[in-house]
Length: 416
Ligand SMILES: Cc1cc2nc3c(=O)[nH]c(=O)nc-3n(C[C@H](O)[C@H](O)[C@H](O)COP(=O)(O)OP(=O)(O)OC[C@H]3O[C@@H](n4cnc5c(N)ncnc54)[C@H](O)[C@@H]3O)c2cc1C
Image (cartoon, rainbow, N blue to C red):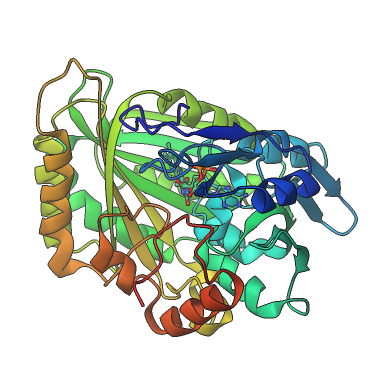
């Protein structure tokens, strides 16, 4: 069964495609000796949606989105793609906080964190979850929120699909008609100085602006300092703010457009096609210091393919001021998530994974312990151990309470 990362060659023993929570429960109860995994958007870079020799619950038929526009709440089926959520909510002038790429599963993105163009204004996707329906290891179907099974609700918000199959999320929606989106490439020669300058701009810009810089290829295949800025506030004010960002350095290309959130997701989906071979690692830093900028530029210059890139997500605003103990998601101070993504096709020789390792190692002394759980791979055990900080013991107690036999495994939990 294919997943987004073409390098993953896991072969399941069986696949079931449930269309209801009851069918999920039946598959969980009747799993026999087979180890389970859950597939939604299939974008986990490590391919954990498909267990080698296991039973895959393919949730893509649980893909409905019901919008309660008056209460500004959506009920989202556990296998729904982010694009479907954006399209369904846009009909009401509303949006759910999600990521950039439409084909990413909404549930797993949200359970692990969920950085995206609305984060500055409306927080991470995980902080917009108001309730969930979960199928537990014994086949029980439970509803969870702040008052029902509150410990389960705490744990899934950051701890991912490690406690049961999430068959529905209930999420808060926000008024978003159009985004003003600026997409820029700055001259690469200026990148070392510009990375810290762009980061400083991001930290003080109005919350309605969420900026995602990174290293990507220009159309000629050379490395470029790419910046995407998405404005989700008053449309009359966005252009001026984006223009001041564009004025920070020498532009080699520039485009500012109004677009719906679903259009933005479609754009990035087209730039990240399924089937390429991918190796991914991540670091989380508090600041883009000159040393971090130097490491990014060096990595840009030493990429092994033009398809490889280093997107950076920024967190500030409502999700960066919550108390760490409120949910299992632990990074509650402003930070930057650096994603190091090597992408190649099998005919391209080179030590592609080694390139991700080199930058990851170089950034270690500048990074917070742990990192973004949706990207940390199963082999980065030390990072996974540190990713929940002071929430670790409580998270492991919740795992023990809800899934002591480890029927469900998704993102890596810390080792006991
Ligand atoms: C191209 C690309 C772009 C990305 N963009 C962003 C972004 O903008 N912001 C961001 O924060 N992250 C982003 N991510 C990371 C992404 O959020 C995670 O990889 C996420 O886990 C993918 O979810 P999925 O359903 O597509 O993947 P899958 O591989 O299907 O699932 C991921 C994991 O979650 C489990 N799972 C999935 N659904 C459920 C469920 N309903 N119940 C229980 N367990 C479940 C699976 O078993 C698996 O372990 C991106 C990843 C890629 C590859």
